Image 1 (cartoon, rainbow, N blue to C red):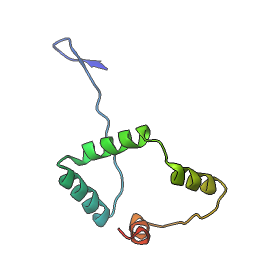
Image 2 (image 1 turned 90 degrees about the vertical axis):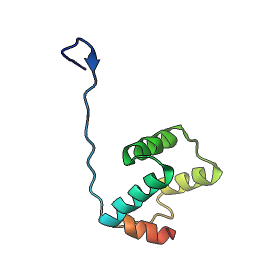
Image 3 (image 1 turned 180 degrees about the vertical axis):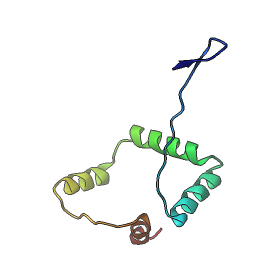
Length: 87
């Protein structure tokens, strides 16, 4: 933390930069808009949800299979992944 002129403490700001295609950016921006939030808050909400969620039985099974290298798919882009998922 840095001290400012008034003597109170301020927090340093970090910047997160990710490379996205225009369609990926539009998808994220649309999701944030539909949720009535900012992209920043959407990312923070998503991370919090991920960190605090517990996998169900189906997910646990898929995780065990992937650890063994079974049923894995590879995609070069998010668009390919989303197309495979039908979204």
